[in-house]
Image (cartoon, rainbow, N blue to C red; front, side):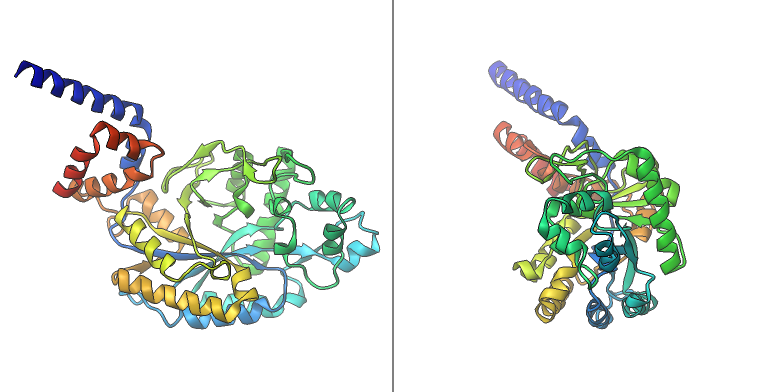
Length: 397
């Protein structure tokens, strides 16, 4: 009996040690708000200044989204990550590619694109959010063009440019990636750029931006501070903040991770977008439904990332895939709700009882479901035997 008690005590000590080592991420997932309802948001980036055929794609998306309603009667929602400017190729060419000039979304050449956006906003199926003045840092692209003929050709093109055709590292707005590894921008340059893009956003949409998503998910604390001064209260993230482009051109220099509901030093609320649905890249419609089921089990909203190129390069096929994905989502979670990121962030921040679960037992089950996404925890819990009492806890809850 003594040996059994000793072995049990050693096992408990082992489990306590594991829990102590992972105390930070374990407690963070307990504090993370738990949603009462399955929530689905389709987040689509890169719309705005650019190819004129966006107008038709936006009209078709609006028509599709209006055919779906959640059980409260709200239509399906797609956020539009808005880009406010592309190069003015004719003027840049006239300067022999030594001066940058921008062509803004407010220009008459984008009247149809703006009209399609506004019609979708009025129908409550589009929610615009700030993606950036440009999908690049203009001085960096101009510098790269001096040695890269493809970049130079992109800059001086006579038709409004598609930023998808830029080298990936140059699509990051908040670093200078004209050479790699990238270099930080001066805080004052960031502040001026954030003020300018907020003003341009207001000129197009009639209100200041309140939600921002950084191009290529590369941004910094200095950007957050500048965004806060410009009125941004919600930042959409992939769950971590990359602050540079590495020697290989990949997003890197991650300086923090975050969960939905956590706050930046400047006071913004973070949301996490981590389900990817790019039909043009072969992602199946079921991927959307599977993501919703998993996030709902974790008490989290399912923010689905998709991009403009799907609906320009493979328009009809991508629309059909989105429609199938929405049907699959309803089949998997009939009580799903649509919500705008701003609404969701405010509900999370205030712990709105309409949206946020406060009862202990449901929160325990959700907390257990979240533990598997902690790096290394699942394996160590299994090897130590801690997985068994945790599974019992989930079932009891």
